[in-house]
Amino acid sequence: MYHKPMISAFLSILMLLACASTAFAGKYTTVVIDPGHGGRDRGAKWGGVSEAYLNLKVAKKVEALLKAKKIPVRLTRRSDVYLTLAQRAAVANRYKDAIFVSIHFNAHNNTSIKGVETFYASAKGKRIAANIQSRVSRHTKTRNRGIKYGMGFAVLNQTKCPAVLVECGFISNPYERRRCAQSWYQSLAARGIVEGIIKSR
Image (cartoon, rainbow, N blue to C red; front, side):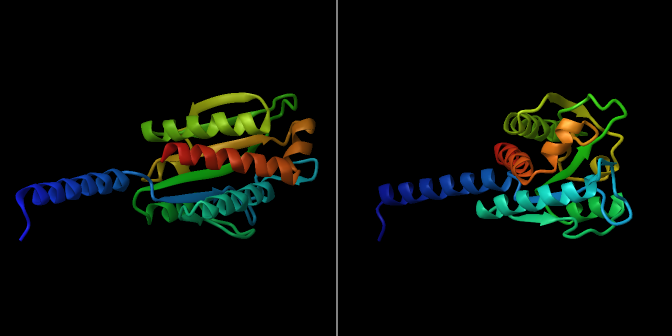
C-alpha cells in the first residue's frame, strides 16, 4: 500500500510530465522545405547560374542538417520538377504543427544590389523570418536586407502553418553570383536557415 507522501510525490511527477508534454506539443514538429521554382519554371537566371538549381542544392543541405538533428523534414520537390504554388502550399498543409520555409535566390536589374532578405505573412512567421534572416546573413557575411511583409507571395498566404520565404543572395550581382554558385556558400546559407529554424522551435 502506498503512503500519502508517496502518492503526492507520484502525482506531482505526473503533473510535471503532463505539463512538459503540453509544452512540447506546442512546438513545431515538422519542417517543410520548399526549393522554389523547378522544371519549366527556372526562376532567375544570370551568368549561366539558375536559381531553381541553387534552391534545390540549398534545400537538400538544409534537409541533411535537420535530419542529423533528428528533426522531421519534408521537401516539396527532390528533383528538377515543376510544382504549382498551390501544390507547394498543399504539402505543408498536410502536417500539423509544421514550419514552411521556401528557399530562393534573388535578382534585380540593378546589378549592384546584393544581400539576404526574408519574407513573412503572419506574426508567427515574422518571428521565424527574423531568426532565419539574422543567421543566414551572419554566416554568409553579406548585406542584411532585413525581414519584409510578403503577403503577396502565394506560398505564404496559402500555407496554414507559419511560413517564410528566404532569398539567399542576388545572382544578378556578379560578385555575389560567384559566391552563391559555390558549395561552401550554399552550406553556410543552409546552416543559417537551420539555426533559425531551431531557434524558432
